[in-house]
Image (spheres, rainbow, N blue to C red):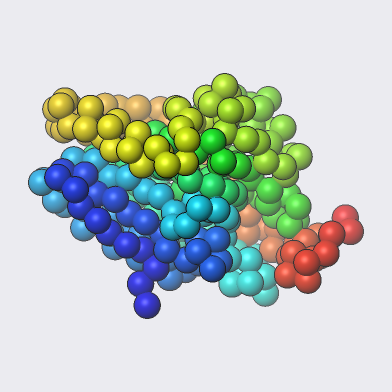
Length: 254
């Protein structure tokens, strides 16, 4: 059963991650579906902007599906991170057209990494964002260690990642993590309005702008270091404790 819905209005594509029973958590299937949509949409000259959001009122994407990789070892963990980079996160960052994340609720772990891979982010007043991987004995593995620093600066990025907590939409806006904040019932309307503003400009020029910005911000050695360190965590006792505690719904003992 598909977990990503596509809607096209005029020259704007809306992708909705539709696993509300799992708070729209990313698993291998959802990543593959999103990849296929990104590839298809990027090839369409009749579409100019893509908006990504989550189904339901609670969550954009509340992280990765922990149960899917809790039993992985280091090589499997590293391969999972590299696959995610190649299929989805880097692919969105390098897309020919602008991608907007409409963050309608929780954006945690891989969910925030997905939003940060998009070129711009709008958030609901109810949104909560964070990279809580350290509470699982692991690190962000889908570009979070690199893109968060670019967006909010080293000190604030380290505060978020080392503390493994969440920030609200107002703080995210003041830190530069999101471009704007809106009431929940106005979020998609605001994203569409931004998209329509972008359509007025040259799509070729916009693609060139993204390529030029990416020449500095994407593909550096830090991304490879993240993948290697992410995989290495899967061989640690604290990863086993962190993921076991999460699945058992208890606090980890580090």
